[in-house]
Image (cartoon, rainbow, N blue to C red; front, side, top):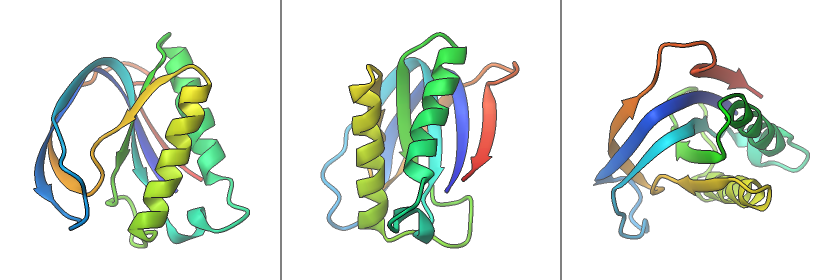
Amino acid sequence: MRVLFWYCECFAWQPAMKTLEDAPPAEPADWAKVVVAFVHVEPGDVQGGSSAETKLVKNAKWLARKWDIRRVILHSFTHLAEEKADPDAARALLDRAQDRLAQAGYETVQTPYGYFHDLHMEAPGRPLARIFKQF
């Protein structure tokens, strides 16, 4: 798994193009003061014994605490490596991570899965506003 974390003063999306036929209808959204995780799920991340999901959750919580917020967006972003996990398995992993964050008291959502989005981001130029992790 590869993840590019951003702290954003503002993060908004508008679904632009459906990439998976079975993706449900999607709506735009706009969030303020949020950690956004651009997540690339690789094939090994969805196999038994992988710790990638746990590391994703722990790192998202760590960064949110550093910014003193409790809001996290998970954004599927399959552009950080060559190999990609099966879309259904990747979605299931993101769903589990979202559930775990919610159970820990974080307000969390995913950008609509199966779409390219028009994105609007406002990220400050400060330490810990951008972090790359590979698990």
